[in-house]
Image (tube, rainbow, N blue to C red; front, side):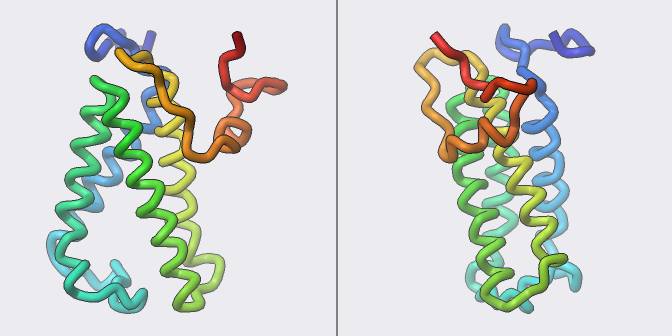
Length: 154
């Protein structure tokens, strides 16, 4: 049980911090994208203006999907898959403009948080069988204890 003893829909999230932390960051990022900010670097990454206007809506929907995923893990799994694609494209955008390794750090850190949240959602019980994670190696990278891959064995 989590420290506060709070359960969602009769289930206690397994290590609920990845999804909650990701949702909190995405909510902050949504607010930051509502108005143009010099530190967002979308111009430098050559993101066309016609796509930039959709960023707040997409990020806001990701917050809703992550929160709903705590009630229905299927929604969380679909949302983390979409965020996996989003942050992979963010890393590709940095590569396309020839950024140094330091510029990749935020996108790579968020990608790791997405993988942790995806693992959380895949471990939560749902009415249907949980699909396998998109990247099977994520289980090996996010081991819970030494010597186990995190997957339940029959």
